Every structure is written in C-alpha cells, then in structure tokens.
Length: 299
Image (cartoon, rainbow, N blue to C red; front, top):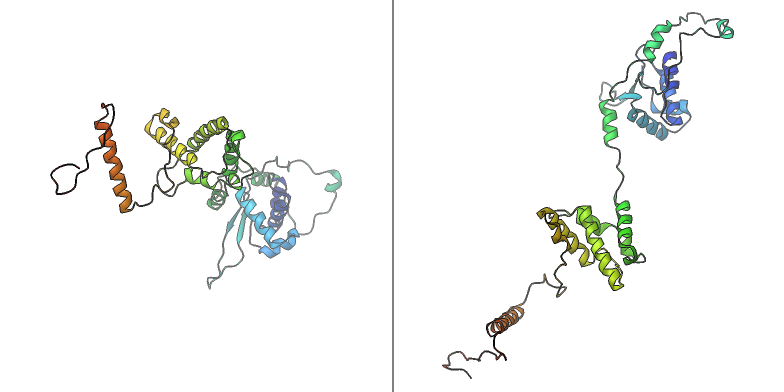
C-alpha cells in the first residue's frame, strides 16, 4: 500500500465516480516507490464493489484519460496472468494538498504505529507535482479507436429542410439515407460531394413546389441526375452546368439490349429524318421513291 498514491488518486478530477473508486483500489495496491501493482480484475471488482465488466470499462476510461498505463504479463509457459498497472503521477486536475503544513493539534497527539517512518514532506510533494506527460501509445490507440458520430442522420434532416413542402414525409423511403449516401460514397465512379446533392435537392424543391408535387423517394431519377450534373460541373469548374435540366427519359428500359427488329426500326426512322432534312426547303415533303432490289426504276 502507498499512502502517497492514495493521496494522489484523491486529487484526480475529470473521471467518473466508479472509475475513481477503481483508481483508489489500484493506489491501495501500488508499490511504495514505483506506484506499480498487478491485482486481478476480480480483486479490483471486490475492492470497488462492482462487476468485472464495470472494472474493464473503468480501466479503459483511466487509460484513455492518461491516468494509468497497463502492461500485459505472461507466465513462463506463455499463458497470461494478471496485468501490471502503473499510476501516472503527473495526471491531476486539482491542486495537490499541501503536505508541508503542520498537522492539526488533535492529530499531532496521535501515536505513530511501531516501525512506521513517514517520508519527508518534500519527497511527497515532488511525487505528486511531477510535470505533465504525453499519453502512452496504448492510450493514444484507444482514443483513435473511439467511434465517431455518424453524420447521416443530420444530413437527412438537412435534406428534409431544403425540400420543405416538396417532401412527402409519410413515404417510408424518405426516412432512410441509403440512396443519398450511395451518391457520396459510390461503389464505382467519382463521388458526389454533399453540397452537390444539396444543390440537386434545391432544384427539385423549386420544380416540385411550382407543380404542386411531392418527392416520395430518394431513388427518383432527378435526384441522381441533378446531383451528378452538379458534380460534373464542379469538377469541370463550370457551375452553370449544374443547373441544366437532365435529358428526359424516353423509356425505363434505355439500358436494355436492343433486338434486331429495334435496330431495323431505328435505321428506318433515321433514314426518314435524313430525307426530311434534305427536303426541308420544299413546301410539301414527298417520301423517297420505293425501289425494288434488282429493278431499274422506281414504282
């Protein structure tokens, strides 16, 4: 047991009450000189009157705050035994108690136990007032692994606010951000910035409100097309392109492979359009004469 370690543990601030109780339990087991100890998690749980899981959470908190360091210990056969903990003396957010002051008169009359030699006050003060230190690699890694807050709930609320009356909040698809996230984090192709998506939603809001319509799903074709147009305009350095309406979709199956009949029909339409362009200056357009293969004249 180290009296100085316990006195130091009482001055630590900025940790939860349960974590502080675990810290005092560690200080109670700490070595007098090095402030190191190796109690088991079960021993700490009994001393702090809590569960082993609570002890694990408190130890992680103490390491993240830089109050203690933990080092694994192995037996000769390679199996793991209780960890070794080192108390970081410089970690305190409160002024250390003045140990140079004379004790109260009532306490001064108490007899000292046999064989007890109190350390000099200057030595105790030096142990408590050590300068600050850099967090250990284990504490830094634990801080880096801390989960970050998901931004998409806030982005979904921002999208709803931009659409205003043009959004149908009773549609189930409007309460998930999956399609919007797919634009910013696509599996393939360049991603859209969130500002590109917001620019697309502003254009959709203006159109739908003018027509008295509402957006029922983020998978509406205009959302993706306008966002990609804004992205391409940003990448090209021409913001005016972002506000050009996308080409209308003539068919839902534009990506479907065309059959031979479709190809022949398209060639016939192209030929007719070519004839119309050639005879555009004629008052009344006449179809090209039909010729039979192998014949010498028109019908």
